[in-house]
Amino acid sequence: MWIAVGVTALGCYVVKLCGLLIPAGVLERPLVRRLAALLPVALLAALTAQQTFADGRVLVLDARAAGLAAAAVALVLRAPFLLVVAAAVVVTAGVRALGG
View (cartoon, rainbow, N blue to C red):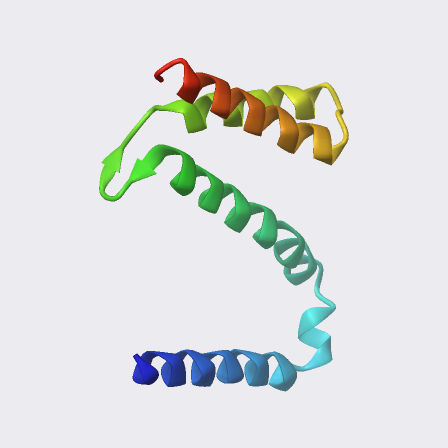
């Protein structure tokens, strides 16, 4: 286990070091700026999809999908963030309570 912790710490250090070694001119390019702005959104969407629709190596459609749908509806209606999270939690719990 300590080997994994050490390798992870070293990897994090190398990633930080690479960020410091990149010339500032590269970071000012429009393509790099656009990618830097879109990358967190893409990663969050991928993590959300994986956590919602996967159970190990199997795709599932359960209460988590209903919660995600409720959150999406709340976002479309421009609800505040806490209300979006609350809607997802309440719908997910409700579907699970009904046996879904």
